[in-house]
Length: 397
Image (cartoon, rainbow, N blue to C red; front, top):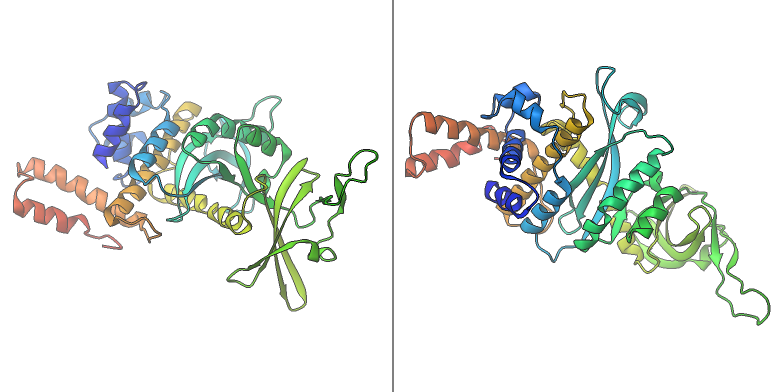
């Protein structure tokens, strides 16, 4: 992947050579380091000093452009892709860190003091895996709610997503607010999300115009049980849930939406989930697959926290935190793409980031060792040892 990284960096005309060298080295370090990804510790696994890391972390870099170019360079254009957005809590010690505040921590199930990052990713539906595009630190600003912040982040990235042919974005129920939906739809994207089970929805009037007065637009509030026959039945999922769909009006979102109701009956208890899309022409089953694919973003947060140092940034500056968070997620992208290219697979496969992290460290260590011993990397014996020992200690060798 080193050649791919260099190719993508050279294609970014606004990035000068010193920054290209630093970014390439930073991504390489984040794939091999052991322990914490602090400036001092990362300097132990590279030729760059602690001060150099600190200095370059204050410089802006176009990670969204880099990641989009990286993905388009590595993956087939024939795939089916959507975007997804979600936020994640990061604990942070100290009192002077930029952006420090109270955020909801899903792992603890409560609001805690720390940092939060909002990430937009692209999901490959064919392989059912996600790749990070951009992460922004949630910063409280005057006259702006956090929902406004998430909407602004999406609107800024929308032209690049549309340029890649991505037209739908999936988000969980928190983002089903008009403050988020309206700007995103105006920017050209369609949202796929979830509503409350008691959402206030109205039937669209489908009768004939009677010829006098204002044409009737709505035909009463939806009662999900009494009006079940008015929905279009679309089949049953593998887990036994019946799928019903209809284009209706959402009073909360102030627009027509494609509503998909998942309904199940167990022990005389009726379970119901309401999914929706602002794209009223979207097929019901595809809408469900889009929403399910949204969960892949959670694996990005998990793997980046465990293996590429997402939460390890020691700096208190928001510029440095942004650089570190995005570099950590981009390093994870590189590991996932290298696994996919090595298997030459387009469909869903099993990947172990722990194994790839071990493999990258082994290769890094052997490279240093062979240089010190002045061994030629073209020697058959060296090549054989390199190939065999690359997987030493890997979980899925």
